[in-house]
Image (tube, rainbow, N blue to C red; front, side, top):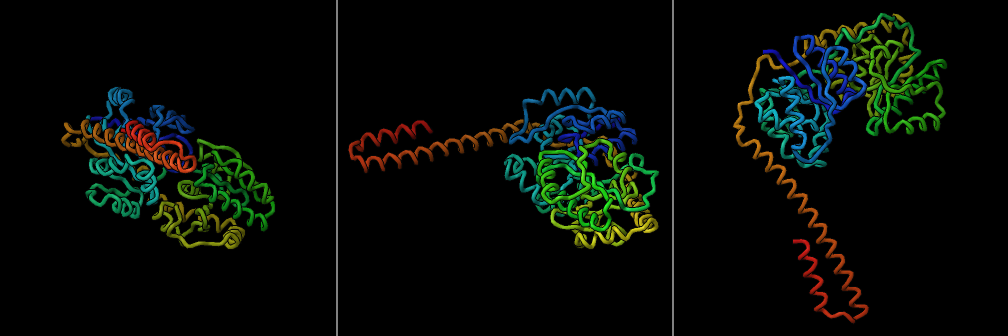
Length: 432
């Protein structure tokens, strides 16, 4: 039977997860699968369309319940495209499509892109639904894909009952057909930094600007272009102006990272853009939120791969040290570093050799008769909790009102206690 795979993602916009998913979708298509991506429309929608992949514009809001309002829409999509495998890449998608996978016996793969325990904590604390559904969600998955061994260990910590055989370590890989360059870099003069302009990224962007400014002291004609967009754009502009940093430009977002990277000599960033830079044979400088990790070369590339280019396993460097090391690179040294990095990546992270899908048509084979009742019970539980919290708030407000009235009585001494008792009964009657 032909594989008809539905890939679920929040939005086809700029970001490490998003570009990784685009690479996977295209690789799956090349493997002979029919691929459909359901996500909110973004800059990568056109890229997928040009590669013969159907995109379905749908907004996955983060909600504190299993979605039932949009079930007919999702079911129509499943039936129309004869979906027989689903790939989940982000938690908000689970609330909408997971129950349909169970009731229709559609096997699914749970992708875990995070290496941070804080991500699990945030979802489960901000939206209690995830405290209820994530355990059975992972238990029923055909496979759980993690990008590193550390990602597997963190997941196992939060979900200790997970069957160990379900895990599959698949690093975020890249298409060498999509990312290539015919231009040779002779010197480090033009820098680019790629990032979303969001609160969680702002300190990384500032640190990248600081590093470039240090390099500017050594090479006065160097330039830095920052590629991206988001709510914190004005914060970045203000930082550049307040620190009087020259030769920095913000040039907006892009859906064609290859063409952008091909214009530059060196790439500053974290995560996916470092992998893309190496594949394009560009000098890659890895930075974290508070630390510079320096130039990626033969001394640290394997550690960089192991931590998914997040930098946790790499030693810290100062901006002065990194700027000096960059300035000392000549054409031969640049070629030596970039060729070595490229060959390592080619051997380990070529997506044509690493793409994952279920080899056979599987079934969940769960006792699905109770699933619809299980979902109803979850929604009822959460609605009850919300209602209890509302009533509790009203009772608390009533208590504060009564205390205020008692103070008034003490001062005026002209309202009878019977009247106060009557008020009390009305407050609690209203909140039954």
